[in-house]
Every structure is written in structure tokens, then in C-alpha cells.
Amino acid sequence: MSEPEQSISPFSPLSSNWRARPLVLVGLMGAGKSTIGRRLAKEIGWRFVDSDEEIEAAAGCSIADIFSMHGEAIFRDLEKRVIHRLLGEAPMVLATGGGAWM
Image (cartoon, rainbow, N blue to C red):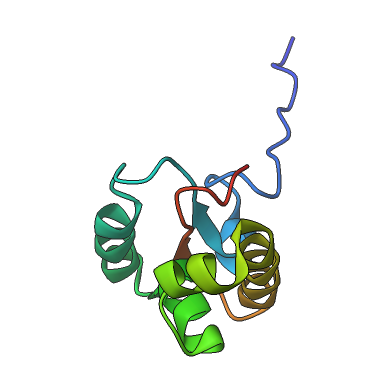
């Protein structure tokens, strides 16, 4: 009797489809998402993107300034919109900010 065939999720690293989607790193502030992300992107030949840097570029000011001038709710909305935009781009290694998972 033969072994039952196992299906592999299309999002599993064992699937050939995993390279069609961005690889997103999520974790607490200071966990090493950017450090690991840069190394991983170089290893697999993808670009690395830090969502905090993209947010600052979109806002034209620092994250600290966004918080002090507009508050956390506005920052989180901007963060959500920037990450959503990035997820629609070509595959990349994306390091999110420490609070993005909340």
C-alpha cells in the first residue's frame, strides 16, 4: 500500500509559489527584524524594505514627529496604508515596525 500524497500549502517555503509573495517579518521592537531582513533579502536576491523608513518617506517627517503632531491613531492608519501598498509590489523582504502586529 502506498503512502498518502501530502499536499503542500501554496504559501509553504516548500512550494514553488512562495517566491511570488512578499516575505514579511513581524515582531517586537528591537527583535532584529531589520538586521535579519537585510541578510535574508541579500541571500535570496530580493530587495529589503523597512516599513518605518517607507512611512517616514511618505509622511515627509520622522515617526516621532508623526506621533507628536498627529497621535498614534493617525500613525497607525498611515502605517496600515503604507504596508498595504508595499504588499502589492514585487516580492520583497519587508520588516514591519514593532507595533504593526497590534
